[in-house]
Image 1 (cartoon, rainbow, N blue to C red):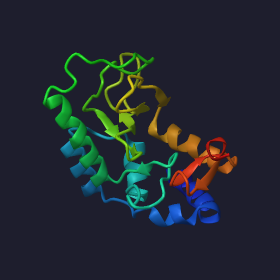
Image 2 (cartoon, rainbow, N blue to C red):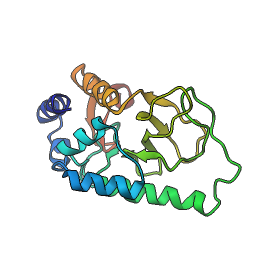
Image 3 (cartoon, rainbow, N blue to C red):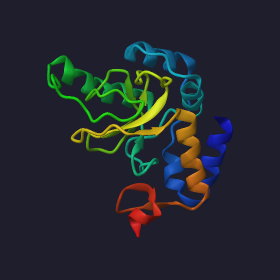
Image 4 (tube, rainbow, N blue to C red):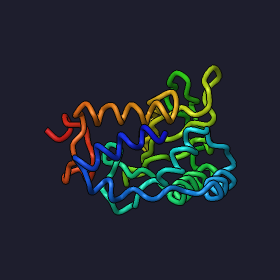
Length: 188
């Protein structure tokens, strides 16, 4: 993960220093373990390694991933708690999402750990409870008012590497209109 983050930081330094400045210092192993205990999960090692380098970003900075905030461990906990309270109160009883290959048809699952936040209740999530035949740790999209839960990447590492490759290929720009890094075709 160090090599991936070195590449991201190099690109940000040259193209989006505001995003680079918003990245938080790495979390300690103790902070990671506390988050895992709160969420009642164990993160895959690639997630732990990434959070040791950067504990997400400051919430008032420009969105790093498709203009979405890359959540710190504290922000993960707070976003997860909001979602956890909804099914605990019966809000999703009888509601299912559209089935996507490898993703359960839950509307929300407590083992879907928010990684990003767009300010409107939508997330990219670490899926630690995939459908049978998939390994825990894939990344999915979860929109609060849409039933689709598409699989974005097979692992956290592949998701972050794909983003890094897209940065280096010139597919992203910093957009004031959208409040962070967006794909070029969204801005043009």
